Image 1 (cartoon, helix red, strand yellow):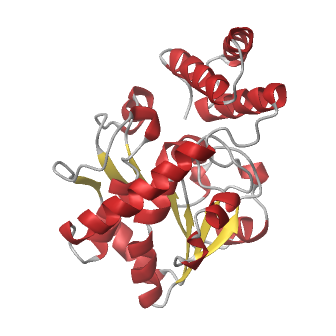
Image 2 (spheres, rainbow, N blue to C red; image 1 turned 120 degrees about the vertical axis):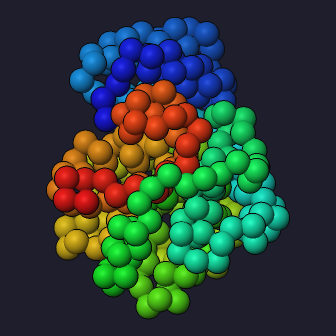
Length: 275
């Protein structure tokens, strides 16, 4: 997915937020905004720009995990919400994908809470269910702590169906994404699914950065479920190679226009030219 004109201010807002959480100053904010303008050539994926920006802030401030406190709050709130609302979703495969998409809706950046009053899943569940049934191995590329919590029932069901499941989180902290240090920090190691690392400190994932089990399962045709907009923005650049199931809440105009969905829509769709 490529940037659009209105991504520029969104990226600058991210710069201001990251600098504030990293205890930087206004001079660093100004420098970050200039960097956004330099990188904003109209041909890049917005997530690639944000990753460059976040690494720049880290290099200037030395803050390894500026979102740590917020992630801990998000994880706690997600567990509380999951205990409260999980029974409201149908106990079938479609209901579990719906719950997984719902977990992507509690977003610190948009100050949204987990409100189950208005959630309809937009997607092709017949196609996705078929892919689940024919796949022996399923890799989930995770997003934030809320996703990690709300994906657990889906993982449990997939394992009950005899599927081998890998759940990929970031190697090092980036933004509010779930990372290996968070798995240990939150005591989440006992949760279901074999947790592996993407090997990076980047939002989303680049084709050239795939390694180990992630590369192996991508290339051997295992089912891939990509959670959140960051994964959609990056993987849609190369998903012509194979089918990918995207599960997310549409939270911005650029993603909405690219997908042909309204902002606020929860989706589970099969992407890729061969999907």
